[in-house]
Image (tube, rainbow, N blue to C red; front, top):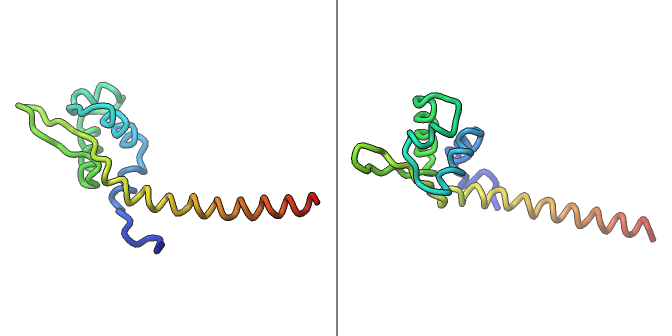
Length: 109
């Protein structure tokens, strides 16, 4: 795997903020309006709107219009490139831990 290639930088930028991660968790449960989201945080409506814009730019959420409200929905497909990249590191650690296990077992013999 070529690390760095095909990584969706906007996804990592969006995920870097704890408030945006919390917003995604709420939206994974159910789509919500900005007003419904604001009630879960101790930040202003404009601050939540900025977070939603970052999430939308990263294609982690989709926004649809329902009457006068904009409804935000979680879009999990955008996480795939980030998950694939992180999965490579699972193998990285699995290999090293397996070697450590063998070294310890040989030392104990």
